[in-house]
Length: 254
Ligand SMILES: [Zn+2]
Ligand SMILES: [Zn+2]
Image (tube, rainbow, N blue to C red):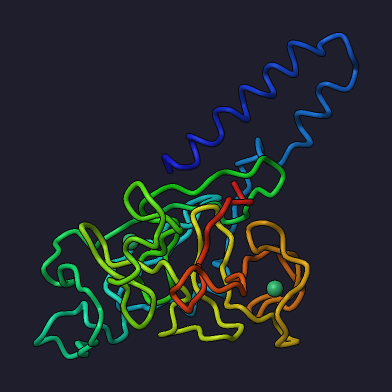
């Protein structure tokens, strides 16, 4: 919820300013009521079909008015060295400069609240450090930053599925190969309410060629054949990782 509020304040301020500046014209009322960003009263009655893909052991997902709330334990349903020895999903990964294990961290749980209908009418918004979305596995998605620098510095600690931990939640920076590997699979949902898919488009199976700066475009998805705005993992190898950034922003749906 606080993400949304932070973004909406400047938008409201902008329209107040517009109303003051242009109060002598007859079109002011129309320009305000026509803006989707100010219309938050819409009640959505059904969860988007894509939410059926999320790990139900980790996530609890429900509608709250015009929002969707996603509560997660943050514990992914796939193997990684980060589970730590003794866990049934632990695997050895030679060459990964490991940070603390998942189970040694006591703050994996995260709750995000997103718009059930993304607002694509406003300005773009940069991503921040920390959780930028929740993946279908139940774990967090982060952007291309690590601490105060570029991800390169921490690349050695990324596991086989482009994730690591520490000091907070286990999170993906790169294409999460545990559930998307050069395909059109659902990756997760981002804080602006837009779904993120793999590198290939549905139903063609090709790499999309009409993506905006965020990796987004309008078109059909496996969960909405009629088409909607969605992101893809951009098909450009990142630095020396041999893999692809999950999402570097900016958000289009705030
Ligand atoms: Zn990280
Ligand atoms: Zn697409």
